[in-house]
Image 1: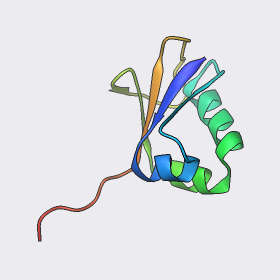
Image 2: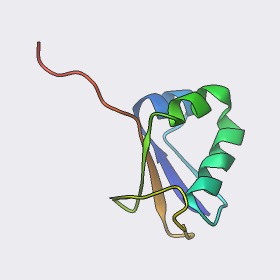
Image 3: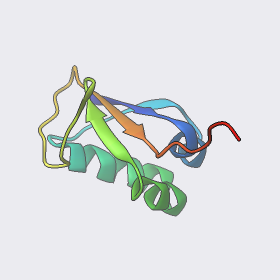
Length: 80
């Protein structure tokens, strides 16, 4: 099972900051997460970047049982 780490609005939509899912690719892991967390998570996911073990990757990238998939929504803010 790949570990998944969720940040900001992805964490809020899922109700957790970490979980684990079976899947051979990033897309399969994210599909399993979407099935568990529902429509709001799916909506947030469309705006997110996905990293595996600290590197941004395409969704067809393979993942293994020791990999960490990080879901990073866009960040806004700054100084006024």
